[in-house]
Amino acid sequence: MIKTVRIQTLEEISEIIFDQTYDSDLQRNRSPFLYRGLPNKNFRLATGLQRNCGEKSEQIERSILRNFTKYASINDPALEKSVWRQLIIGQHHGLPTRLLDWTYSPLVGLHFATSGEDLSKMNENDAVLWKIDIDEMNGLLPEKYRNTLYKENAHLFTVGMLSSITDNVRSFEDSIAEYDYDMEDRAIVLLEPPSIDQRIINQYSYFSIIPKKIKDIETFFDNYTSNTVKYCIDKNLKWRIRDMLDQMNINERTVYPGLDGLTTWIKRHFYVKDCKNQH
Image (spheres, rainbow, N blue to C red):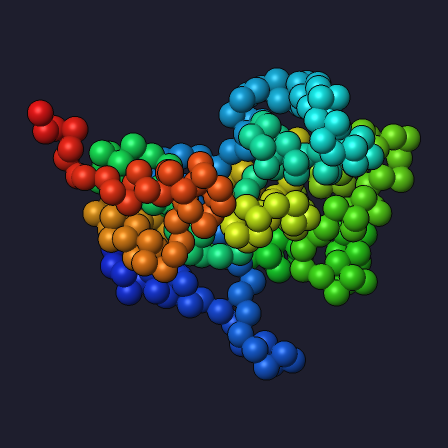
């Protein structure tokens, strides 16, 4: 079941940021959660493939990956050897895929919850920060996937770990079909992408690989999880959080390294409220 929590104060935001568990074996504090921020609480959890292709997602997915690999292999020859790498690299560059982005950092999640929209409309909609439990998600996986995590002493899959399970089929393109068969509509693998550039590192990025039988991601979380939380952040708090994140150096300049991120940060940092009403 999804737990919905309304956030109206900075003190409640602090509780999210410092939500960790003490590990007696390590004698350190660790968090078992991943986060995803959206600027409007009415936005549904959906992959780029679902948003772009709708009911024809399953039919079109292979064509998308085939065409992407055909033209992108000149830059990354390894794409031809791994469908999982195709998904990751494609997703990273805006290709509509079955992957859904998450971050290990609640601060980065809050960044995405308070950016990426028309600045003049920041006060019109509550934002949302989703939180999922890594251990709970792994507990839903089929046995051979859980065994792989155990053998690797890992909490998240890498491309190599996932390939060791799914690539023992007729062709690597059938790895997705094997994955869909294993997951059905009851489990989702959480994937740690390779550090292909600074953006993935700075965003502390992870992906969930949505099986084809999961048509509604939120329904899946509601039916099969107990620790999933949807934090609805009051619209009147968004600018305050935004300014706090800027002071913490969590902004477009650091989340999107390069000139595009720099100019986006400068544009927002020097935005004048109500400037569109001035003549």
